[in-house]
Image (cartoon, rainbow, N blue to C red; front, side, top):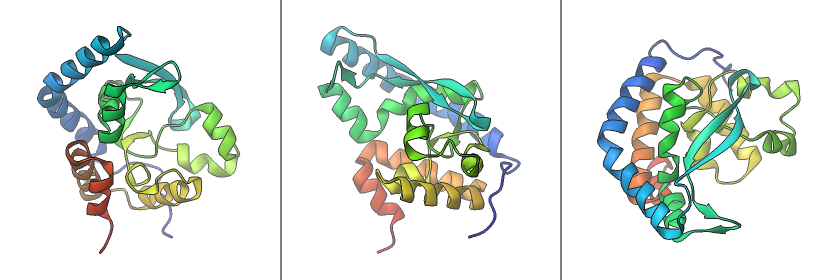
Length: 188
């Protein structure tokens, strides 16, 4: 496998800001509708905040639409999770410079420890800002080994064309659902 690029390509930050601004302008009514539907379903707050591990293993607070009430997934939450729309508020994290549009999934400290990725041998995974989407988020499913492989592959080959393609497939996932959009990335 090619060596990992520890620095993003030159236009990555510009893509993050330009695409985030365009997405926020286009999706503001969708976000408002999701917030209202979440609140109407159970009266709880529409946003969910959780500590995650970012670039350089620095913690930050990720913002998502709430999809659960107590220990159960809400009806609105089930739709949000199936389409990936629960991730829309993470544009806030991109604007704050804590995340990128494309990169490895931001993990909780408990996930990092459970996977054994707190070992310095996995510092490569935390060399860049985590992403709202990425190869692992779109293709790996739930397996740690597959996620690790896709994260390494992305970090070795990160480029403007790859990021644009992954953003497009992620957008398709919001429209079609994750399972159907994954088929766009798989050969055959």
